[in-house]
Length: 434
Image 1: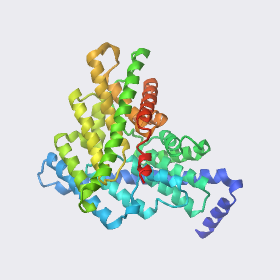
Image 2: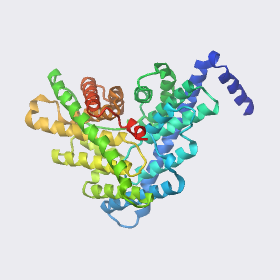
Image 3: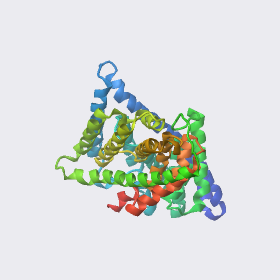
Image 4: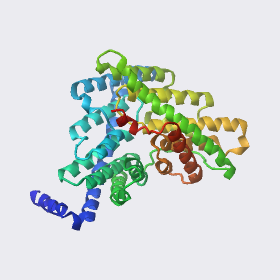
């Protein structure tokens, strides 16, 4: 083993001669590691979900309604205990915001393996107990940590460290969402700030290898399986997708501000910090008791929204409920991402506009469901200022390429709208507050 490591170190040391070969080889390695890690992460979330909702109460006879009320609070308590026992003030920050911080301060090793493992455990508890968060932020952190650990191990330059972090992030996202192209665009558009196109090749390789690993082990399954017909009546209908982009852009601002309002103000409650996640979980449980669909177990609610199973009034309640539940979860110290809750809110936003248009001009739109679908991508574009990512990831997640024009238009408009109003993204707010 030492012999092979010494050969690898010699190859890496001769950077100019073997640079491209070395980076591509490491991209393959990172893709294999992140693909396997993504599968393990998803399985761990499913395990905790089973333990919380079935294993602990399998013979109790307690109704699912009461489980949905008490289990998130139990999960919040566990997260608070872990915060208290194992984490410190300087350990704050997780997900995309932490990776962005790492990329800004290369050689400070901000994503240490032990801390990453603790945060991933907290994430699986957060998601498994029904609290409102997503998988993308944690898996971005995990992938970035894998890439940076390998980079620091071989004492790479800052430029190569950034490439490896990008490879890790792309591979991790690709493994979780089973999408080979969108993760690479996400890395270049959001993490690299639309710069460093020379990083594209190894990042794409890592993403593709990760998807190959994932599909080989668990099969080729789309992240969202949505039934129905989606389309566009004609070019005149594109005007309504401009309205959708404006609406989603405005809602994205409220989404971002709600999370950081809770985060900023919960510390004003003078109690032990251990109880902050519990307070947030109580808020989620109260919302979920009256609106159980905000828990979105296995993303069934998103599918139901896009397939048109909810009326206008309920869609409004679900949008507000999911926004508040996510703000309570993330703002109080729960660990998870904002990406999938954002997709949920975007789908509800599109459904609301679609219902209104269907009432006032039914012959001018293809159907309500298309607006819900496009709203998902528009929300990603809005809160991340990433119209390309919003467009491509929606096309890949749904495996539907018939809506390229309305998706591109809504994503562009929503991104511009949010930036005109707020001039921040949901990811850079975290480290701007430091």
